[in-house]
Figure 1 (cartoon, rainbow, N blue to C red):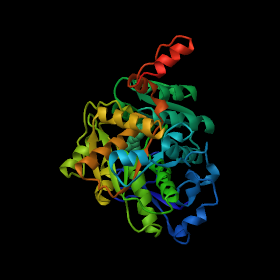
Figure 2 (tube, rainbow, N blue to C red; figure 1 turned 180 degrees about the vertical axis):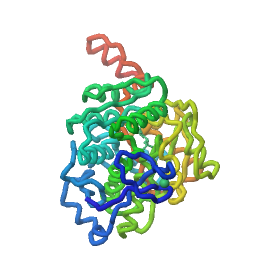
Figure 3 (cartoon, rainbow, N blue to C red; figure 1 turned 90 degrees about the horizontal axis):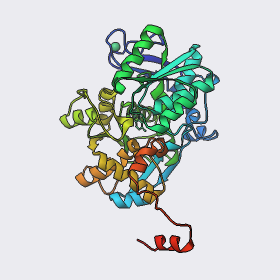
Figure 4 (tube, protein in one colour; figure 1 turned 60 degrees about the vertical axis):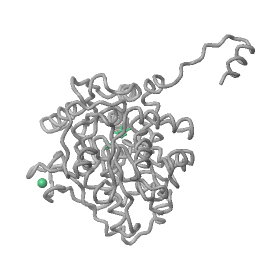
Length: 406
Ligand SMILES: Cc1ncc(COP(=O)(O)O)c(C=O)c1O
Ligand SMILES: [Zn+2]
């Protein structure tokens, strides 16, 4: 565990109350200042004796592993996706497949650290608003920790698999009349007025766990820094977490340059990409976000300003993709790589393709796309966009006739 302080990202004030989610002085976003001095003495090899996963990187984490609530999150594969590279026209393309986490998304990385922190504080009730994956993950970790859990979901807009998980793990599932942004506003109110421990990514302990995806990518590439990392952006914490991990690795001298962080949003839900297009440091919230990629259907991203900073500071980019481009990229991964991701995750591949066509991404680049969630989370979208099962009689001739068709 690292010595650390919770501070305001905007004014630098130190935050004492662990239930505070924004700065009481200026209303700014919180972050965690990690004391990296002990790591300066270390090399990446020193951490390789333990199982690959979030807790391998404990010297970069602000929670004592003695309070660890874990179901073996992280340690996901980094696929070298040659067919994607050939199709999109880049030298080297990799997919970090976060869909193989315990509950099927990258959220488990933040949740193991966030729920461990809740345990450290003696919290008995945890909660979050969610487009689906956060609730599935929190519900699982709360059940492991023996905590009460309430999840606030936008009614009717959560993929079936995610809803099933939250129900299955025993959370109180509250279906809120409104979108994700409305659900988050209510969850924040409950946290402020009733001291439910909030585990949305506005809680700075969540991104600390999510840093581990970058540590793993670097481990898996033997510290050969890629030119670019592409990821979908919703509430915008994950791109910030990856950036924070990069700055920490640079600070301890384990890397000497940063990849260009590239955030992709759906056209119907793109406050960060639109701010980037204007060269702005802040975004304008969008009232009625809409996209097939329901995980990133977020109009007022909590960490939007942090995401823009991460993108500008690494010389990266932000772009939008259409729902049709997202679904085509999802199909490409399925048909050419045998990888089943959910629509939000496919946005990274769709974005890479578009930026390559625009000439923003160079043919010579080595690119890592982070595919954040498992396709089985949202079977309805896959079934809707795939051919129907073929009716077949029960004779060999019936089968032969069908197989001989193109
Ligand atoms: C599958 C998936 N991809 C991407 C995101 C976006 O991540 P962030 O909100 O950290 O930008 C989410 C968030 O819910 C998600 O569930
Ligand atoms: Zn402040």
